[in-house]
Image (cartoon, rainbow, N blue to C red; front, top):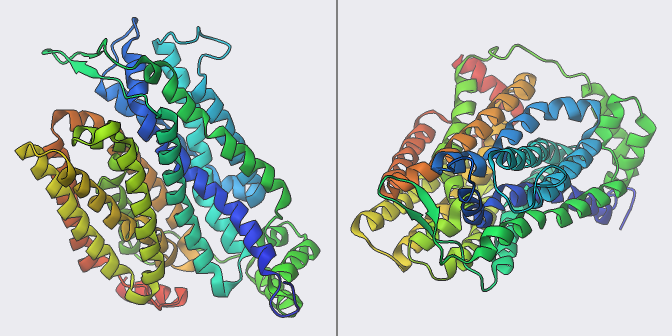
Length: 483
């Protein structure tokens, strides 16, 4: 309903929902590898012109993250030159092309179903293409929502983007489960000299076809996202930047009502040319803390679980190749993300991060203990889910909240770009090294992540300021005082 004071909630929620689809595709694209990676590994193990190994598999499974770094780095350029909406349209095209290319990497140049080094390179290039879309979406979706939403509900609506990311992961876990159906993941043998091979008793459907359907399934939500973006407006802030004030006012009127639209438009015009300062104007500490928040969010190892969940659950003794347990973990992740959204403004950022770090450490050390003692079944599976759940109620959403709050206004753009770049870089490092680490020793891998979780808790306790209830101007004063 639209009125002079409040605007149309239906209009606001409709365009916000479309933007949030970008977050859903972010989660979908980064987690689709979880169900596909074992069939993909077996496919390239059958290549005759090179020997596919764990290092190569780690790089291949994580290649989309290289694109994420590129997309994140270029997001500011595209958002300024193309606008927020058109940048999201570009992301949707990249998602779509990546899905089709990953489904059928042989197109035009190679024989279908014949793995070789050139095909491996082509596959990785298609995944990098999708990663660029993820990098764009990760930066531009929250920006679009923030620039559309009224200030009194902006935080809630932007937080919904993080929920959409986790929901996208749950969707793809379920899609992968349905695609696998009665089929099973391939059996991969390891010789005494460390050479990997596909066991002849393996289900070859998952080797030749299953992983293709999983990657290709992303084309459907990507196409829907691109289509719906033709029905949403450009953001008022961008329209002011390109001197289209009348269009900006029209959108503000629909969202906020006529009585507030003019006032908000004048505020946007007054701040359209923001004052900027040098990166270290507030000292080195704020930049280092922002970077370390991003580094710890990835170094605690969560994406090793999200990207390789079925393999981990299968090795822990779960039935059915671990796909059903992955779906259960996705549902738990959704619930605990909601816990964070509804408690972050009540309890504060620091308590949730510290509780989450300790909970993750307990889960990680429990997985390591189970591996060292040869325990299979419910306990290791439960421990992995606990580890993931504590991440979702802490480091998952709250790291993004802190990064958006902790930097003073005048250096925020530069500082956030650096922090996000470090986040994707360490995401890639953790994800690409996990297969080799896990193959060497699951106990060592999870003990390492557990130790990093403890270090993260100490870091937050000692050095991260609490931003609950503080204005952005308060943060500027805080860092000036501590400089």
